[in-house]
Each structure stands twice: as C-alpha cells, then as structure tokens.
Image (tube, rainbow, N blue to C red; front, side, top):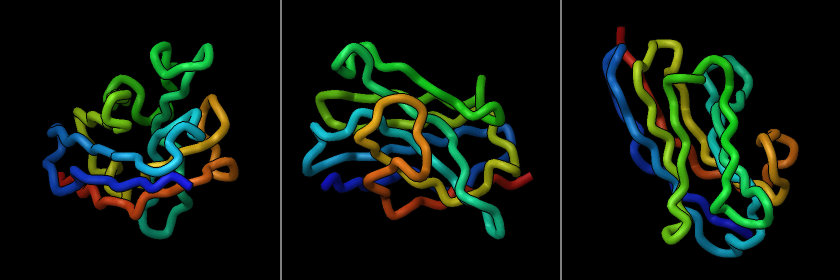
Length: 128
C-alpha cells in the first residue's frame, strides 16, 4: 500500500498561482504513475495531470495533462523525495475544487478505475 499526503492548497485570486505537493510513502516502488484529480461540488472527479515512468524508471517520466489545464499547470516529481508537485499558474475560478493526489501501479495517463491509492484531498479556491 502507498500512502499519499497532500499539501499546498488554499485560496488564490484569478490569475494567481499555487503549488501542490504530494508525498508518497510505503510501497512506493509499486507505483508507476502519480498525479492529480480534482472534484468540484456536484461534479464527478476529473483527471488533471499525471507523470508516468518510462523505460522502467522515473528519470524519463512522461507527463499528461487535461486539456483544461494544459499550458497553465506543470507536474513534476522529485524522485529522491518520492514527491510529486503540481505547479498551477494563471488560475481561473473554474479551477476551484478539491484536488486529490493519486498513485497507480499502471503506467500512462491516470484513470480513476486504475488508481490504487488516494490522498485525503486539499481544497483549492480561486476567487474572481
């Protein structure tokens, strides 16, 4: 089992920036992809971004983004710390949601049904 702990959510103004962090512990060697989903009130949980190992390691990590955040959000990973970051810039009110860190034993773009571990969620609120 992989344990995920998120940090870095909060309140930002439209056009501002926030950085989320997700620290993984436990059986981290079982994870081949990590990333973020978000869920706004009354909506389904949706994919935001992911980083997947490639060629059998994280050093050549491949990134994936939802169209709605492409060009504004950047996902990265610190392999030494087993931590994934989501740098969010040019924030919009529609980015307001609870953001969940996720880890999967399957490489590639994260899918809800293939996520093995979830974080507790962190609130991001963007005011207009």
